[in-house]
Image (cartoon, rainbow, N blue to C red; front, side, top):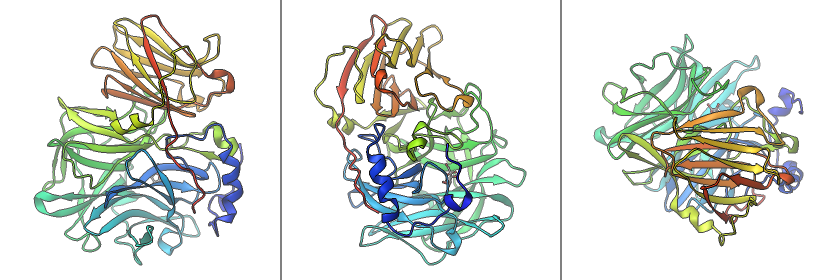
Length: 485
Ligand code: FRU
């Protein structure tokens, strides 16, 4: 693994030609995906600035151009007419000001009239590496690119630690006020959300206080990427708590969870109806963000980073890593969040191929489950050994996934085996495979499991227990991967 000096990680990109060679090289990787957004070069992490504006979907990702390393972060911008077909639109935000000299960190967007407004964290660091996070804004210009405002909207508060970032902007129609939710840490290192409010989007921001979440005053050490949304009259709070292990999640200290409950904007209290839930039970799912301004009160559209902070992935050797998940629909049913693939994704299906134990590198599997315990093993060798092994235990209503059998093993210390618990008996799985990622939707969205997997040439097989019905649909490419910087 390459050791990066700070100077290398934080190098400013002077022009596209500096990364042309890297782009050409990684295009040849067998792990480049066909229908997922992935970094043009280097590393992609959190989704940012996800919104529908004048009929176009805008999405950015945290991007480090130089390689598979968390260094100087840009926003890289992609657009889509339909959330399925994506094209590269070039750099979204550049860290080229005093207040974002060490990164344009995560944030959101909102469409208002003619304007698409982006909010992000300017990650300033002094010579001695002391961090000062600023909340900044940018506007989509006529050239189709975001343009930063001259000055930040506001700086950090000293009643919280330096961890104050990831502004998520929300319009609360009831009191006609905008709110910004910021992922934060208290001075005694507890994770929390700071809330700002204003009647205007680009001025007048005042600190409203810390969001109270009764029962969760000491839950992890930092809450990254907060997102709050009302779906069918219920409030959903999603965030990524860090610096804590959670039951059943191996050694990982990075998680993505949600509550369903009631948000009171007067008292700044989010009262959960019950315990937290994992947004996804897989190994690699983090920093999820919902699209703004979609104009549908009964659903949200969510996208996440397929990856986790602190982890390392095999494509590091090829100088790139990371990708975004498929956008998924969120609904609330019987007090639970239901997550389903967008129906439009089916348009990428090619003609069904025989379920003969061969696994196409990019495909969708529709799996009908028997009323019994069963196994479904993906990326096995021809003899059925190895691979990503799924076992369903009907008595416990739990799926266990184990990736330790694959040729390319990675992130072994955080654990290679995780469980996806279900409330209902498992009847159906919808599995999306795309060269180095797997997303599993159980029982029409009751629970999901997202993971990277890097099959070697001998691993393109699968096996299933008797009674498991598998239908295989190869998938077309829908993400154009052109060199736009
Ligand atoms: C989450 C995160 C954010 C931050 C960004 C920096 O993965 O740590 O909190 O804004 O990544 O890339």
